[in-house]
Length: 303
Image 1 (tube, rainbow, N blue to C red):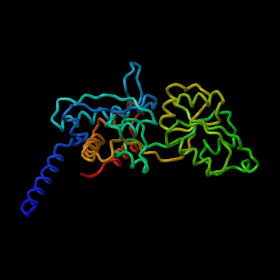
Image 2 (image 1 turned 90 degrees about the horizontal axis):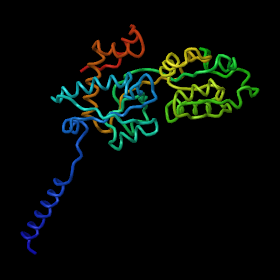
Image 3 (image 1 turned 60 degrees about the horizontal axis):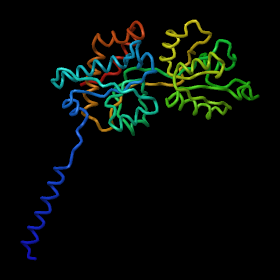
Image 4 (image 1 turned 30 degrees about the horizontal axis):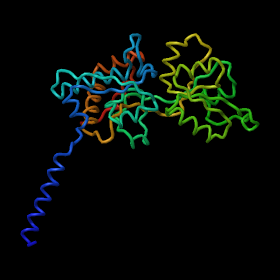
């Protein structure tokens, strides 16, 4: 074959490869798909009151749900759409990140802690709420244990620990959450003998404390306080004043969905700077004071 024949063959081969690549389906980004389909899949939890739960009519509701509804409405306006239909997808703490990765969920609107390690799986928005892990215990619980877990005392074990006073403790935590991860690490670090019971709901964990099945239940402080006020106001239990961790809550989207995440963050900033944010907050947590307003401001970024 002469040089011109080889060049012709090479040209045809490159042409076929180019045509093949152009014919291959290219997966559209979330923002493009929202614009094309005029719908979005929102992941929510049914057991994270007051952030994400089912109301009396069985519909998704909560602080985070209201935030997501607002920014989705603003995204629709930015895309010049009359509306964007919301398809709610119920998730669990164990399934939520896989649901994002599989495309089942476009926007996760629950009580998700913005953790560094999770950025290998998903991308997080600006923080929407700041909370931490606390413990709920019975009023008649061991006084030494209360000093460590409930009261604002230095986080060190009393002398009783050296004599095995804190051996065979029973703790509970919501399964597949940062509270369970923190609790296991804390027990190992402190070096006490304790059984950790993961439970499938906050209600189950609090009930375990009431019935004496566990010595303390660990979870998100804001959720515990809201649950106490809603369902356990007259119970002989209380949430401690100690906060063991800093838990910034955020929305989550698929890893690599930068255009969509930018749109979400831009609408969040506009929401934080508007009176609507105070209205959403007051619906679930009471009056907005100067500290809360400062937190709204600290969640924004300059354009």
